[in-house]
Length: 441
Image (cartoon, rainbow, N blue to C red; front, side, top):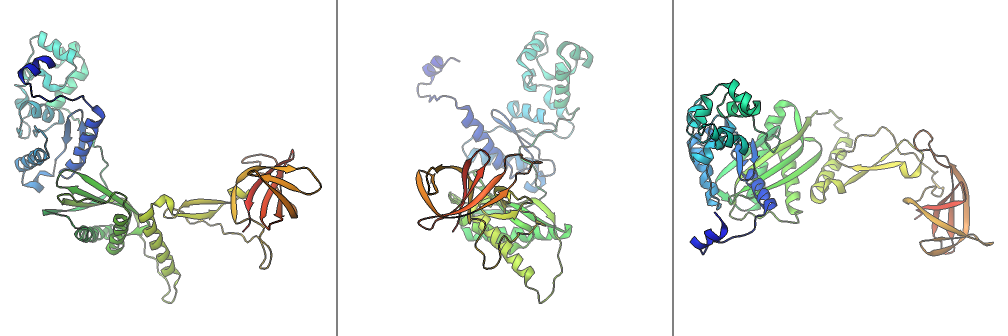
């Protein structure tokens, strides 16, 4: 109806502009919450969700109990819900719109769909209009026609969709989230609100997960805790480990660090009625034998634990480990990698000086910055708008570029000290161009 006609009949009707991005965001939030019923949840925009509940309905007391529980929970959150359960996604989608609450027995999709209008198949509007003009207004009437006739008139895609709706062709849904290798969960009769109970639950779930991982000889490298709030909000917290582990105490400690470092605290609201722990990434976990009097293994384990705790609190991208590189170019001689995933490097750090010798490399290395050498009898240079008068100078030390990687001009490096005792590391390229690359401590 036209909006003016609607307002004439219902003056108190509230009208607002459509917001498609907000609707899509809300639909994704509902899909996250529906993950507590089935791991296979697909979006059916603009207003629908498809759940594959094969093998999951018995956890909720059967198909009818599961459907009623799902509808009641969504209505409690303030949504108008229609739902149906059938053997195919297209049939369930159609029946949800025309036969709310219907549960179709196995193999009865065709009988349930027969009385529905052809629009229930979700066909192109032009095809649906053509079917109506041909006198095929119901799905049952379309089914009665031969497949060759329908294919010749409306195309093979329309016939395939019809067969999919009747359960004669396979049309699996595409879940929006990847199913993790391992997952354990706990439901609560009464929602929980305290952080201690949540952490105790995570530790308990980690214990169950540890038994499964131990049987497979694996350890977790990345885990995610999912908190399902009673009002439909879902929060996810992920932690990573530097080595495969399945120790519940370590995992609980990492999640405690994560909770304590959240900028947006985990608000329980009316409480969480489901907490799930998922192992997103696992690796083979080998136990290495070590000497009883050796403390090297214990020290390495302690360092790994510290790295994991720092990464959980500040983020893995902020905890870095320096690794030497096989090159003599100063700015490429090392690489800063995430400490949890930095591979063991066979290269060792090379000593650049003797015990009592002055440092050959600056403590603070930077990308080369151009400097201006000023004329005169005294050596002077300008760097960042400040003129430095050189009192001592040592060099040159020639470093040639690697022609097989990045060819370029050779560099002549000098160590310079100004009148105030500040020491710099500069180099000169061919063509008398000067650059500053480091500052000594």
